[in-house]
Length: 224
Image (cartoon, rainbow, N blue to C red; front, side, top):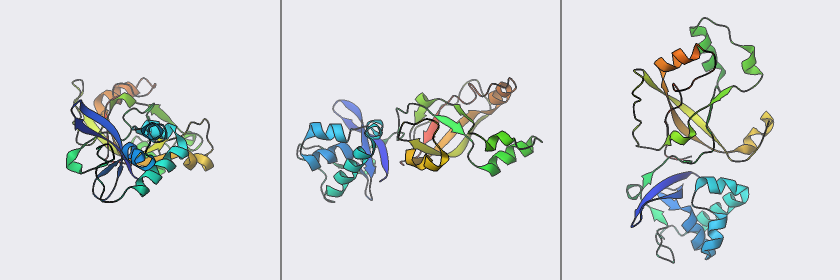
């Protein structure tokens, strides 16, 4: 199941909805659940209209979402209350899949990438990298979606981007053993992380970590 967050234009303006990507476009998951159960209040509780709400519902909510998709006829576009169940790509505007993420942490994942960075600086690979995860917290309120412009900050002349893999943590946990990590990952997406390199180099001399050089906007891919 590939999920996305999208906006649709209504008489009240642009409204954000949770969708499931299919071959022809996007299924409105909440409205599909209404169609399946016949009870709007029950559907709102089981399959909310936001990805964060669905994740908070746990595996039970995910299973209800899968049932709603499976029960939806392939040619059905309009529900019992004239709500739109299916959208074409040209009828919607995509947002970041998780626009209200509670946190965003950036970390090294691939040994070869880490080694290359230290070799360029003429430094040995730190043994601590193998002992515990190292990350920094970045701007989770600045996530934007597909086709949205990233504004160039006025304080930098070296604005750079990095193509990265993002893991969506869907369950609460603390000090999770590596063997159980997959149990907490709800899905993956592609992320572009933007950096003000000239500012970042100056900040890192203080040895406290990146600040304004990394606390900027990130662009997500189409879905996860």
